[in-house]
Image 1 (cartoon, helix red, strand yellow):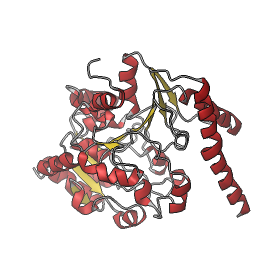
Image 2 (cartoon, one colour; image 1 turned 120 degrees about the vertical axis):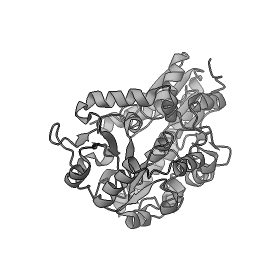
Image 3 (cartoon, helix red, strand yellow; image 1 turned 180 degrees about the vertical axis):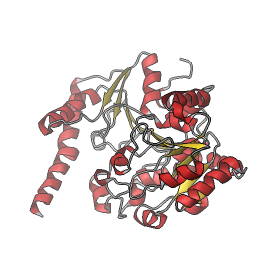
Image 4 (cartoon, helix red, strand yellow; image 1 turned 90 degrees about the horizontal axis):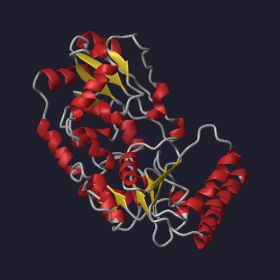
Length: 393
């Protein structure tokens, strides 16, 4: 107990006192570089998702883009020193972008002339997070948020639709001017001319055994109340699905990165039906898929942009809802057929792909509610509103 209390006090002193002091000291001696952008995600090694289109755009305009991320197998002392040195770069930054929570900037109020932009990694408003999940099995305690309110320094937080602004205001616990329906940068990819066909050809080149069969993408999210304990509790009966659908369909398996070891992934050539797509970018897989089998993952929002059929494999809905909960009633919101077991998956694939049972209008309504601001120009709109960069400049 005493050890935990000491660790808590040390965290408060480091995050809320020492590091902010170091940052403000650096601001005294360093000037802002008007074309320096920082991209910070403490949990991944390389920039991805919303960072990529923003970095590409700024780099093309002559900005210096620096990524600060996770270093695998980094020693504690090295990490401590690297994190402290970060504040000398932060002091010079014109803008800092995040895609998740960030302890590095969460407590040091940015100097005048520097803005912090939260490019949250999920579109729409599906699973509750942040302040919306206080005191749940997934979320932090109210006391923890009191001491460590990580979003309070955010200047802007673009979201995918005006309809989800209230959900993010609640989750981030910020003032109304922060959350803006400017769209989500990574969705611009889906509006590139001919991109769906290009991705389909790329996937068929990677897995030529698919041939002319329909492509099913199974992309489940992880289970568990902590990132460090992520798991996946159930797998489909691939043998049964292959027996019933293998002649007409192939299945690409894309486990969540945090639970990839929990799902048995077939070795190359092991089966003519299931293919390991864990190394391929999710956006390219979505463009290639004729049908997505999802559960509680926010990838369904991006897939809705393509107006294609989805199945929702919600075998553990009651438990998941109890521990995590949703912003909108799950059963009334998802834009596709529900599946509780393998037999439902087989029937749903047949109904949506081969029996003219796909309800496109349902997906369109879902898209209009949750993705209205995603029109292929999200990156330009964010940079114009945040940095005054006009499209085409």
